[in-house]
Image 1 (tube, rainbow, N blue to C red):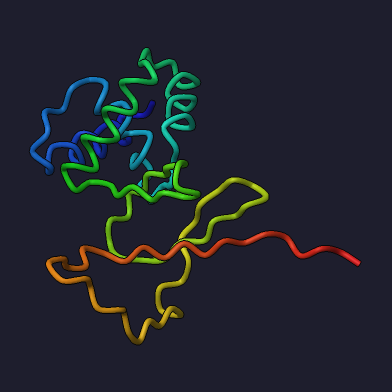
Image 2 (image 1 turned 120 degrees about the horizontal axis):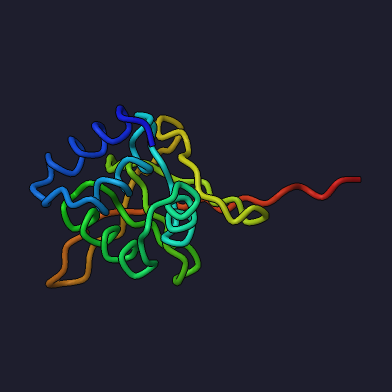
Length: 141
């Protein structure tokens, strides 16, 4: 892993107040080391870490992603009620879920218009609105 990626990862973890442990910094460098946002699953991040020579368990990856979410560094996007993706872009924005590729990407936020939300039930408030637009390839022919 290059020095610039590690520096970016260290700064990213540090601004959250989390302790920048070796494993957190290594995972952060994979997530934000090139300055781009990422959508990862715990499994894909684990594989990337393993491919990069990092000694980290899948449980540690899950725990680290949870800590990053709790610290406001990432957001969790759930697809199908069970599959979680973790997004380094924490600003409100919609997503495309590519069913054929089992992949999540950002959708253009400026093209999404929500004119009204239903009233929250009594005693509740709306915490957030997640928009996941499911896509599949058109049949040919």
